[in-house]
Structure formats: structure tokens, C-alpha cells
Image 1 (spheres, one colour):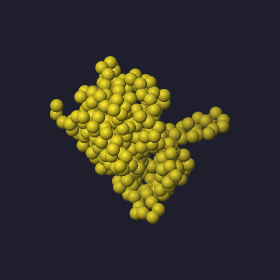
Image 2 (cartoon, one colour):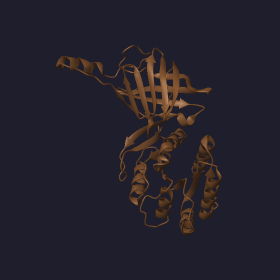
Image 3 (cartoon, one colour):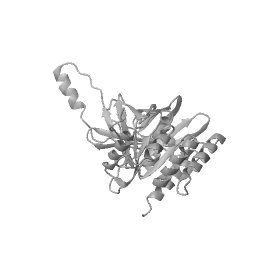
Image 4 (spheres, helix red, strand yellow):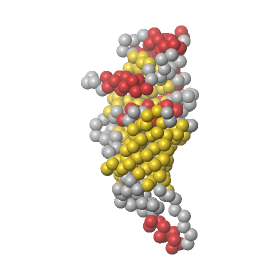
Length: 338
């Protein structure tokens, strides 16, 4: 899971007060329970519930870890609503209150107050609020993946790297290029795939896509520890999907090229673009992905399948955990011995 910056705001007046205050802001040993006015959060595995109005409560767990002096990390896991699970890339603790923000979703926050062995507060998701009550049950579970921000040549804004905590076994990685419309759901995909052991580089949302941006993202992943450089792919959503297909259909994209391609919510291929999609299917392993099952989506998905015209290309439709499992199954096929 991600290592978060642990922030404490200290205000001091005179020089002696400043020196004393700085000493008080140093990292403290892990604490099993919280105390009033504590300068550091209680670490451990906290289990409890998220309340949903008019529905059964959701089982939830919070892992708060202290991996090294001065740094804490935190992770929310909601077993029966996995789209709410996340590893935060920002952790702030002040006045016994812990505040976590979901990477890529600034409107999704978890705010908890420490009360002895309890955390009590609210998970806010857009306009919805879920009251939370979590009790310490023991030491924190080991981290599965981490999140960090970094600069990648080309796109404006920072990228988010979701990478396995265990980097000893090289695995599949992918660069994800969302649009503004698909960006809100992209962190959920990144979380779900990172929990399965995949490395995900989530790039800033945009409506355009340049070859230099694609090659820069792929080169970044090739340099990332824990990545199998022979299995680095590209994932483009919405209007960026045909742009990616067009550039990969040309022989002069440059290096590195993706080992596989996922196109999410690609528009219905026009008659003029079908040759481009056929060329892509001949040169790359392609997965088409649609997060709906309504009649217009079915027509669009069938149109993409016809344009790809390849038995090796796959087009999936669905929603929720079933669609995630189908995508993970397709990725596992790529891991089969070649």
C-alpha cells in the first residue's frame, strides 16, 4: 500500500518554543491505542462498519502502518463494496483527527477521530456520506500495494503509480490514459488491478493523446522495479482509444511499443476506421472494454468486435466485480508461458 506523507502542523513563537516544538514533532514509536492530544495516529488493524442509510452496514477495515520514521501509510478496505477501497497518498493527522484522500478522487475522503482504540468518523464519496466506526483488532495487515505521485514526460500534471509492495517477482504493468469523463472511475480500476499484483501508471486525464506521451509512459514503466518489461501495455479510454489505435497502426510510433492494448468505452468504429482497428488486432493483443450492458452499448461493442475482425481480440461488457474479474482473467492469459 502507499506510503503517505505524515503531516503535523506545529506553530511556535519564540526560538526556544520552536526548538521544543520541533522535538515534539519527531516520529514516535507505534502506538497500540490513542491518547487525547496525541501527535501521531494509532497504528494497527481496525475493523468495523460503514453505515449505509436504508441498507445493511458494509464491513470495513482500516490499516494504519508506520513503515519508517516520520512516515505513515493507511488503507481502507471495504470487503462487500470493493469500489470504495483505496490506499491513500495523503495522510494528515492533527488534533486527534485522521484525514485520508483517495488518489485521483479528491472528493472521496475518510475523516476519523481517534478515541482510544476506536476510530469514529465519515467516509465522504461525492455527495454521499457513510458513518464509520472501527475498533483496533491487532497489528496492521501487510501492505499489498503502494501509491506515489511522479512526473512523466509529456502530460500536464502528476501521474499516480500503483505498484505492488513486493517487487521481487516481475509482473504485468500498464499505462492508463483516461478522459475527463472516465477519470472518476479510473482510480477504482487502478486499485482493483493493483490488488491483483499489477502495476498501474494512471496518467492525467485529457481528450487528446500524442505518440510522445505514450512512449514516455511506457518507458517510465520499463524503468519501474517489479515490472516485466516484456508485458507492459497501454490502456486508453473514450475518445483517446481510437487515437491510440491509430498511432499503433502506424509503424513509426517508436520504442517501446505496448505488448497489449486495452480500449475502454471506445466509440463505435466508423467504416473508414475499420482498417485501422484490423491492423491493430493483427499486431497487438487487444481487449475492448465497456462498463454497461444497455442496447446502445451492445451495438457499439459489437461494432468494435466486427472492426477488430480477429479471433484473438476480446470485447467484454459488464459492470462491477464481474467485469473486473473478466479483465483480470484476460491479463492472466498474458502471463501464460510463451
